[in-house]
Length: 317
Image 1 (cartoon, rainbow, N blue to C red):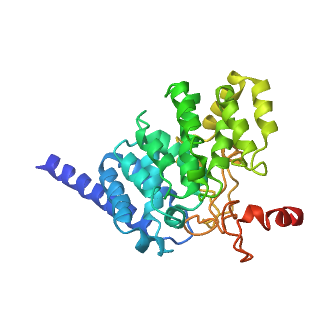
Image 2 (image 1 turned 30 degrees about the horizontal axis):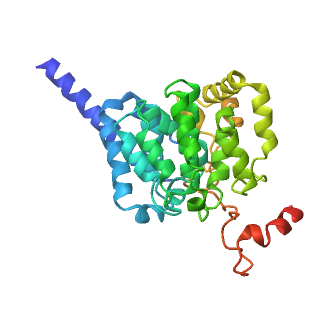
Image 3 (image 1 turned 120 degrees about the vertical axis):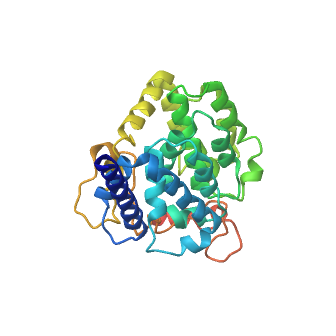
């Protein structure tokens, strides 16, 4: 029948597009695959199981994929699933960014500090248990944990989660600060995000953390907390909301096409300038990580960095 032939032709064409799109995503060649991303959006229902499988494969053998600089499918899969607000993807995403040490950094690079808070927020379905578990995971990259905190701050601003829940949870991070001592600047990173909450309820905790040198003033100083308290909670919340609006995932091309790893002379979208640092190499890996205050000093003295060469470094800077 003619009608059946048309259906079969359309189905074959769809399968061809799907196969070609997935193949295009797999190999990094320095070109942003805009047409393939558009095709993936058109085929959202059909391609989603394949995108989930890509992330699951990476999770099953992260060290193999972390060493493949020519592989990019997991980056497209991650960004598209966030664009789709796919709730099924949330657990595998959290698991990927909970991998120990620098594994997540090798796989996803500056996505961690740029896109991850929005990715977590868009896929969580207003359930924050897994995001909190990432915050508490001491074996995970501290920047992944920090971005999970940022997601909670965004959720509070959007009234997706009660303020008292977020404030209580983040305040509890400082209850056992000694347990975090070997985790470099995590609590200082946490303090940076907590500051955006205008945390009048936590100021005794914050003040004590500065006194005990748990928060590094070189990352955020106490005066910044005093400033946000003067501004007030509503003004702080509006600032956070504006940042969320400027970093919308609704325009996925606006989030990805200008990355430095793509060989295109394209100006970053205005919405991304304030809060995003583009990847600098194939998978967006950060070129270096700064030395944590509590890490062993690289001079070999055996002392902690903050007790040895930190001040010398600051003077040189």
